Length: 216
Image 1 (cartoon, rainbow, N blue to C red):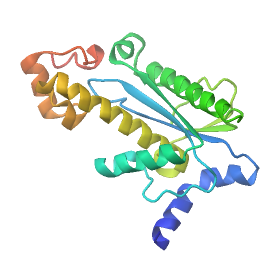
Image 2: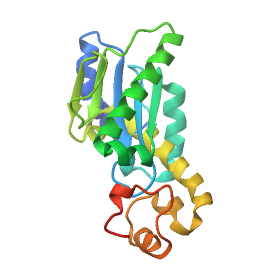
Image 3: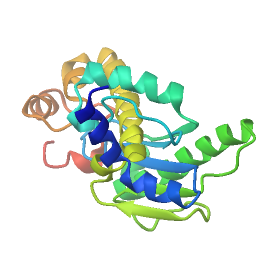
């Protein structure tokens, strides 16, 4: 690994390093993908990485090319002490709103990560670092909300990659079911082509009704 990349990753782990110094080892990073799209689920990931983890290229998932994200996903999930994913579909997003859906996905992701920890005879995460969300249900685990956390926390960045790749894979599968909307390209976000397709074909079951009222 080049010195510049090592320095970048060391800086990215500053939040975690402060906890490691206090003897806290099981740090869970949490991030989501898909709060803004007009279609598809919101996906929340929880990821606990080893203290010595330094995976080259880890960053905010939005700053990484799709093929590179796929590679990093494999490296992260192979190296992680534990991880979990919560998926809330478009129907439930319409029912409870995107913020509550994201918070529900977070709770599911934490529970899944905890189950994997139990299988390794490990305790619950000792602290949670989460990207921007507040007033969340962590079942008593202390948490720290960090604005732009996916750009300044290694654990959150790893979670952002898991969430993004998981969701993108789902949207590529849906693209085969509803090819007229181009989900494989825009992943459900409100691009001009996507909005034009909604106007031309009407919404499909994957669309969030509360998000597309202006286009139908």
